[in-house]
Length: 305
Image (tube, rainbow, N blue to C red; front, side, top):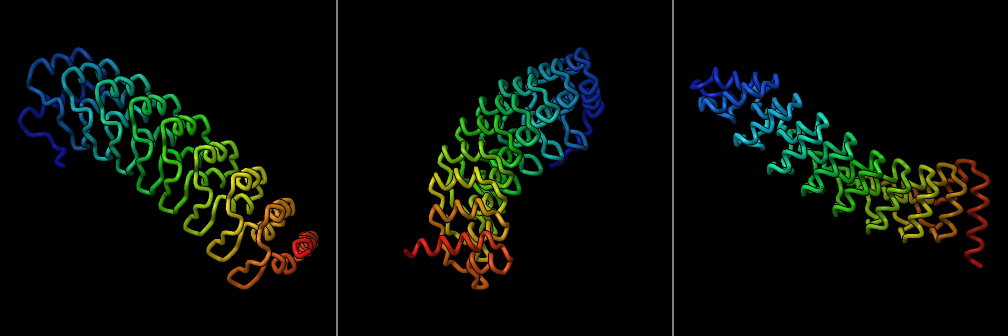
């Protein structure tokens, strides 16, 4: 895209940029009425008068430019539209004005982020609400495959997360590392978000690029409340990650006796071997975890009788 204005009317266009930057609404009106400016002219940074007015937060100038039929969806050199710029300065009033004026809510910037994805990332709940009410697509993925829902889960933003679920966000989309929102929430131990996802029908057994499921992460990191939730919801106990380890084996490695006990009581398979042909008992014995060794031996004996 050629961001340099045509030589014809270049000075007038520059005047429009300056007046918009400075919030000089009367001058903007005069320039537009002179019929000697291109309202959608872009400077060397790809910015239009509307971009500058939004960036500076001059709502009155933004209104004048919209009435003058400014293109709301032009992107600057970073891929930012007027809407994205309004979100970045947290101006909900300008966001609302642009939405009502027909701005495209789903344009992606240079990082493939939409206005909604950015608002979620920085925690602007009221703006997220405005965008979703306006029809923003919650399932668009950025260059890393991350959706707004995964981003909210990863940051523990329950209030924003609830808005996205209500808007119908797909709970099972995966990013480039094959993380789902459930895996992201589990990694940080956020039970209430994990519970929302379970209730919304999230697939409990999806594996990330390393073969880990939400249950494996919860067991390994000691999030007993999430382990409980996942087991009660029917998660598969015996899935193996890339090294052949199960949730039981990883909880043994981490010395988490309470979780080992919980997994055993829910039917975890003692006999599965990892890539080195070790069972959970082998791992416990090698690490000298006597309490867990006794628990596993007792449980194996009980299962045989």
